[in-house]
Image 1: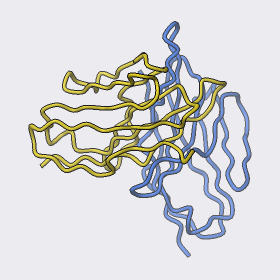
Image 2: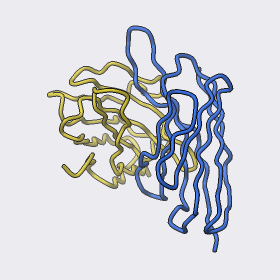
Image 3: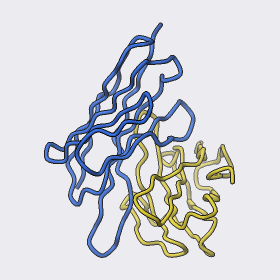
Image 4: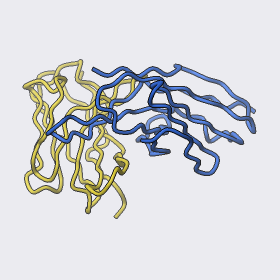
Length: 114
Length: 114
């Protein structure tokens, strides 16, 4: 089975930096994704890690440690529009079937305050 | 191409009725996924198609649920004899066969069973 944990809620100040952690247990790991979801809207892709290390994309960075089953999403220079839920998702593969389904965490609701 | 399209956006139905949702993926994507999301939770995987073949189904997908992708393009998800517990957002996503690419989500169909 798979299990993904991330904090339920976080609050941060506009202009600051926030780190959202995600821990996971899974078999057949084949990548970790971060999605952003504003209330009532579809999840939108932010980042993808399959190897250990840091991936940077503008104000957003994501880190992965496969040995620790750990990832974080780093948001810099926070803006009010960054208030949203951030979903950590793990993709696994099964021998033969080639499944590419994602297992999502419950999401971290980030509130950015002035 | 404007992305993944889902129809309808909202559906209210009486318990016991059948409902059908449609998803039009991004045209060059041959992988299509259905997820269900309830309030405060991350999306939960329901089923996965590669072209017209349904390769995987979650245990969440009871025998009242059926999904099709007859020509490998659009997909439909039907729920028979709806129950109040079926009330959720039903999300469709698609991805390319090439490489480890992210899944793009549609806006979802919000189902309310009264």
